[in-house]
Length: 152
Length: 358
Image 1 (cartoon, rainbow over the protein chains, first blue to last red):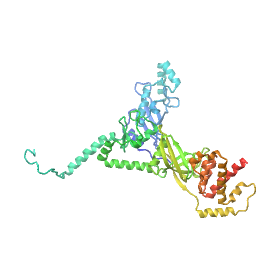
Image 2 (image 1 turned 90 degrees about the vertical axis):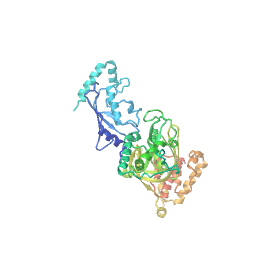
Image 3 (image 1 turned 180 degrees about the horizontal axis):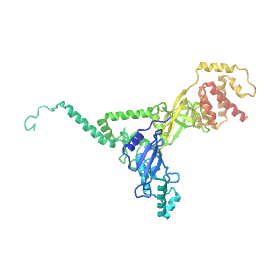
Image 4 (image 1 turned 30 degrees about the vertical axis):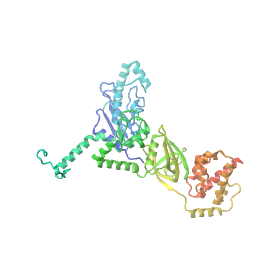
């Protein structure tokens, strides 16, 4: 048995549908309104351009006091995202605030794709490559995007 | 104008005229203006945590305003303002005043919306979980009439205690079921299904935000259904009491008239003892142990749990509170339905302790 959905989650979900963010979508599951299928487009001009990345997002019981749990499902070559799709992003951890929301978090993730930060790595191997041979790393990221995140 | 024309009524102190001339059209216009005003300011008076109209708004030193309840929940987790992340060095919320201007403004402009919001929050807090209306704290054993001291540090349980205090001041406590033993209809759940209803007597919030709670056991209950609310357990519980005295006496008469038990049959012997003898056995044991200065009967223990109660129905609970034996063993008292049954449990502990000692 579960408690009814908080008003805040209902409103956020409604607004995500009625005022969608370009390049981002989040669709709640029919059988679990706390679980979302998310799609984020790689930002234009980045090595993830033209990629469509699937993520899963879950709102824990104490959301919005605690951040949403979110993970990439599509494989991605990125220094701040590990092989399990886990994301190293401050607003998903210590810098979470209940004034943030699903929308702002997804925008932050999209921004992270546009600005990889190898100085704060989650995926050591990718970060090493990024620092030592950036053109090669970017080429791999483009390649992976073409292989795994193809639109359609 | 009127003064220039000499028509101003100097001779009367005040000259009111009832504004009765408002036409339907003018009134409708007023309503439209007001609703447009409300609509345009709507996002400004919505709380950034719950996304609803602010209820009992409180403003932080950094100038951000949230519902009192929302701010309280934020403070369970952090001391940074959710909007600007500045440190919120604010006094305990009970002593922080509401934003009076905003309260007046909201009450004046949209009393219906404020009332509806207050009603909705009340409903959420009371019946938000349907039948699962009792907060359940899975922690340790507690007994009727005995004191339980808890230190609450997890945000979700601080919320639970705060809500309990706003309600009837009670919450249920259950013992952790570490071996996942099946619990009746509930199956292998992470708690034992007999629990104790605790009444909060006193709480103290420490500087680090943790909460010291002093509570007293009220009555035992059994969990019929359970769920989760905002991270803590909730349930539908059934109060669990002893059978009537007449039934108790009937059981005693039946058991004491059984043919005598064998010499080595400790359980059988205890089973045939009159209830008054079981009481005497317990009291005598405590007296002897006190004479030997048993460390589980030191003054500081008695300061917390009190002297052994004269009431035979309560004696086993007191005894279990002070006796250093396993919680699983003590739990045997929770499902008892007669005083006699409980006294038989305590008698079996005493016999076992004695057999180890001598």
